[in-house]
View 1: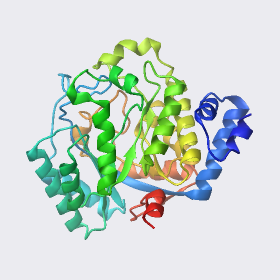
View 2: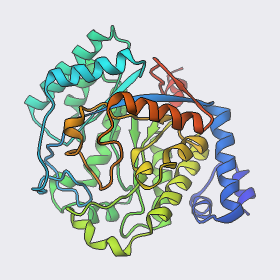
View 3: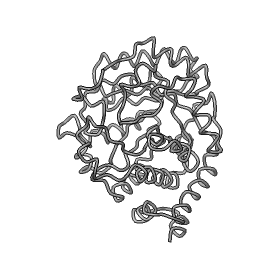
Length: 358
């Protein structure tokens, strides 16, 4: 049955659910097929995105997130302009090709101007050679446009769940946490011209494989250019922690995440897919396995080590005490173990995006 599904041109919801339920020999067939698709459409190159965790100050209270506004056990910070520039210089001089500026969600003119200035300075110091992805949450279309004009060309905004009812179980019931606003932001980003990425958490409370199948179809219908998704890992200072005993085991969440990555690679053959850090929080081989079967982007942390302990969206985040030099060494090893190679000093834009531009 699995072989018949894999040979279909277009997968429907039922097909995707069957693939997500696969185990044993069928699971190996799934992984082998997604590896084949990845090698055919993407090749064995892996692109680097150095993550700069700019600030853990957030206006939102998402029930799953360790840096939610009401978590009083977090030391809040904002990197200085000099710290961001130094991290960007490290990425540029070490051939990373691209960086990601990631931050808690803030909507203010002051925050907009700060990021706008940083974008221009990073473009200048790298002679426009360093690609920039932003992951700064929901903003107005005007703000997105200002950042795009200042030099950002990719934007990651995770939908977290494409199911409105499930989304509302993961967020407070107020205007600041609207599923429709999230969706509207994704379309605004596309309209501006960004390469748009989204993603979901896998193994959430209340989540079913039917939800996950809908997530895959949502990403296909949105026609995304890149995806960052991985296992849900609970954080003790969040409301969802109360459901910790009702979750899939960590290993089950890891396996289901790898299934999701494989299915997404089969459905959207030429997008960029990240091997997220959360995969490695469960298994030292988590990101390696993801790269082997589906992923082609990896994101080493280049935030100053001093701040990393305070940017914990989930527990047991790996690499918080690893300096930038050690990080690139470990990334190089895991990519080599996955029988792939790092593509240095390249933006590594989504092939789907490039094909759409033609």
